[in-house]
Amino acid sequence: MKSLVSTAKNALHKYPRLYEGVYNFATLNRDYIRQRRARAQFQSKFGGMWTDRADFEEKLAAKPNLSADQTAQLKAWRQDGIVILNGAISDEQITAYLSETKTLQAKQPSPLRMTSAALPAPTPYDPTLFDATASVRLVDDYMFAPASRDILFDPKITNFLDMVFERPALLTQSLRFNQGSEQPIHQDTAFVRMNAPMKLVGVWVALEDIAPDSGELLYLLGSHNWEGYLFSGRFKHYDAERDGPEQLEAWHQWILDEAAKRGVKPQSFHAKKGDVLFWHAALAHGGAPIRKIGQTRLSLVGHYCPIGVRPLYHYYKPAQRRIYEDAQNRYTTSYYTKAEVKIGHL
Ligand SMILES: O=C(O)CCC(=O)C(=O)O
Picture (cartoon, protein in one colour):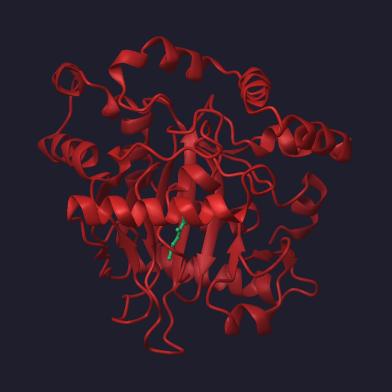
């Protein structure tokens, strides 16, 4: 089945217009149609959140019961594409999370998987690799660790997500780093692929005080409004088979060129333990080079879309379409099957 989809996809790559039509049809969803209808309101042809609309100020004024803090956050979100909450996650939550993940890592075999640009595919947790390689991250540990969900669905996080999504959030992926990622500056729209590409928020949680030169999170303020580069001239998301490494390189360069043209310099997140940073789907961000070798940078990232939007892996891995629920929390995973989740639970 997978190879059939892959063969059809590769054949269609030769006909980009046709491919775009088939792609749009296959991933059609109400959200995206609504945004296409309101096309004139959005700068991006891929739509966005209500905070991206041209009539943002009127919509904001019409929102009932917003506190002064929330209003300020929403204005900052629209303008900068990031919002920071200081001390949102408690020491107790972080201690419980680190303890649960330690237990999961020690299990024989550990249910956890890791990914990195250097690994060809998700790989079973391997302490040697995880501790020694900066860009290696544990993925979707919330599938096994209730304390991970306790952080990623903390009300301070979900209240903000509810505000910008105007709907409950679906957690689609998490990444846990022990060291800085050193990931080049990028926009998640390329890699964290949704059927409504601009309806996505990244959340970065500091699990310790972040030391200087540890490979801090970097971001380019306002870059969520930069439009211009489309993969194969049509798509917001990157597809290695379709677009090849040249386009990836050209897109990274485009981000740097835009920043230089606009005089925007990368800023670092000098986070304290428990601080949270939200970034917009198209906000350019990455990990600074690690200058202090061996320095940890414990952090947990969540990627979310609103309920109703789907990650693209729900299409190309239909077995992974399941949405898990626990209390108010909804989450999904591309990395673990239902049977693995059952066996691996704490
Ligand atoms: O934590 C980092 O260094 C970068 C994380 C990131 O880019 C992401 O999760 O999209």
